[in-house]
Amino acid sequence: MDFKEIQKYSNNKYILDRFSYNDLVTNEYIEEIFFALYNIHIELIDKPVSLLGYCCPCCNYKVYRKMEIFDICPVCMWENTNTGEDQYSAPNRSTLKEYRQAFLNNQKLEPNNLKYIQYELGSI
Image (cartoon, rainbow, N blue to C red; front, side, top):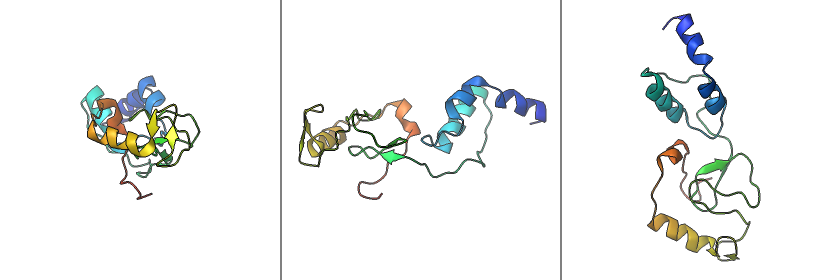
């Protein structure tokens, strides 16, 4: 690929808006999107592989830049209420433990959520 081709892709507003230094999106996801758009394999080398941010207390996907009360997880739809495992959460209509179990039992990961990394519960 020559310099003019690189400039063409680096000036693409879609790529710049969606993926510029997004610390919650994996390198692999960006590479796959680039391939889907341009049919060219790339490898990101200047973006850290590790993701910054915070995991959802329910599904453990890293989806938050900072942990805020009342943020809703885009993966499992848990509304963060800072309640304990066995404490009832009114907005979620269940405890965190019950909601997590229901999510795990019915887990249907939407294609858009494949960009997030899930960690083992208790690993972070």
